[in-house]
Each structure stands twice: as C-alpha cells, then as structure tokens.
Amino acid sequence: MHPSTFLLIVVAAGAAVVHGHPAANTPAAQFWEQALPGSPMPDAIADGVQRGIDHSPLVEHYTASPSISPCTLFDSTCSPQAVAETGIFFHETQLRPGSTMTLSFPAEATPAILPRDVSEEVPFTNVDDVLDAFNIVPGSAEAEQVRNTLSRCQAPPIAGEVKSCTTSLEATVQSAMRMLGVGADNHAGGDVWAAASELPGAGLPRQPYAVVAAAPVVGGRYASCHTLPFPYAVYQCHIARRGYRAYKVSLTGLRDGAAVAMLAFCHLDTASWNTAHPAFEVLHTKPGCAPVCHFMSYGNLAFVRTATTDLL
Image 1: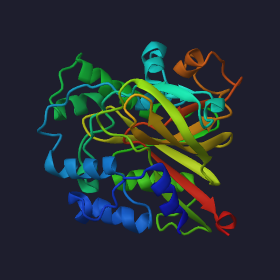
Image 2: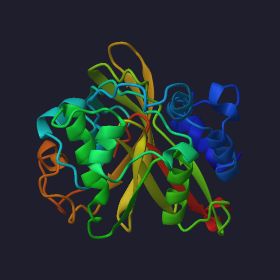
Image 3: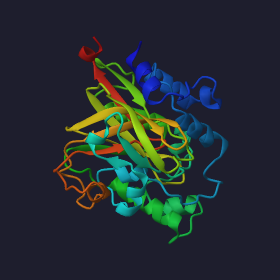
C-alpha cells in the first residue's frame, strides 16, 4: 500500500477522495491529484474549493469569526485562557493509550478557496485595498482580523523557520513542496503526501477524550499550512529546520463515544518562539524548556516528505 494511502486512512479516515465530490472537476482538484498522487483531498479542502466557486467572497458579507488555527503558529499572541479551554496544546507524555484529555474545539467557518486565476486578481497585501474590495468597515472586528493576518504574513520568520502566505490551493501545495525540497511534479528523490485531522466544521463538543492509539508519522520532513482569518482562504505555511515529531492520534469521546482521528505535532525546540506564546502558560513551561505539542485544527494541512530510503 502506498504510504500516503495508509496515512490518510489512519489519520483522516473519512477524508473524501476528491472523486464524487462536486469539486472533483475543478482545476484545483486536478492539480491536487497531479501534484499529490495517492493523497485523498480532505473534505474541508474540497468544500472550500467548491465554496470558492459557488459563493464569491467579493459579493458575500465577511463576518469575523473565532479561529484557533493561528494560535498554534510560533509567533502566536492568542489569549492563554481561550486556548486552554480548547485543549489544543498538550504534553507529549499525554499521548499514551488510556490517557485522557479534555477537548473543546469551536466551530470553524469553511473559507472559500479561490481559483488560482481569481486569487491573483483580488487584493491581498494592502489593508485599505482589501477593506475596500470586500466592503469591510474600517475599525470593525473584520477589519482587525484582516489587519492582523496581513501583519502576520508580512512579518519576518523567527530564527530557524521558513514561512510563506498563500491565497490559492495550488500556491499552498507548491509552497509546501518548495519548503520540503521537492518540485511541483513531486519528483526529487523522495515522496510527498498530504494529511489532515478529521474534524467537523462544527467543532468538537467539550468532553474528556480517551487516547486509543498514538503512532508516529514516519517522515523525513514536515511542512504545515494553517488557515488565517480573511475574507477568503489564506494559508500560512511554515517549516522548522529541526526538532519536531508528528503523530496520528485516535481519540474516543467518553460521553458520546465519538471517534476522532487527529494529526498532532510536537515541537522539541521552542527557544525562538514568542515568549508570550499561549502554550507556555497553558503547559506551565518556558521557551526552550520542554516540548510543546498541538493538534492540527480544522482545514489545516500537513505535507510529509518521506525519503526514498524510508520507503524501502
């Protein structure tokens, strides 16, 4: 079995192979299949592609909504109190079968993933142009989200990090592959596939979840792409040069019995992170003192490169 097929079955069981989805015949879906052969497109991504075609963000009203996706970035300034309620950060020692963790992920809106040709025409870099194009009132919560996202994208990476912001699915995949040292044709002496947590857009109800299994994701390098609040889908992709591990985690809700398959990353080197990062307060640690682990939230992607020697 192709390793990408195995990973997606375990990590994102239920992620739709793009065939049969309304987005199946879109250029974005066709690009995905060519660039990532054997990697099913997760439902959240296929839904976003279709939404980008059916509902133009240029005519829809943009409403600010909460998102925990940016909270896991290295320069996060999210509220520790708000993050603590979700359970998204945890210690690596908690990934033991039989251990429990309380999770409560908020509902996340499915951002419209614009067709590449459209994304190249709409404003992105200038705050005033974005507010004008999307009829966003200056000083509003929506304007603040736009300003924060553009500021985050324009800020330099922290030490040891490579990052970029992208506005189409094609650009997101290509950016992650460049970070992994692979061309868009996915041929550079290695193999790349995509993975995601299996999460409903409605979020996870607050309850204790038991860890059923936690298995390492075998890979030489990993690049993560996180959604950022914006009128249309914007991804911040990044890669750390050293010190991280990935896991596929199976959880079961202790109240409703719901099974959840999650992708998790543990960062071993946090010395360069923002000192006010919420994970440090939540986990009672400091930069560079202990590993920081987090789940990948709704709509976020991880790209995994397995070297040829790992496939033998």
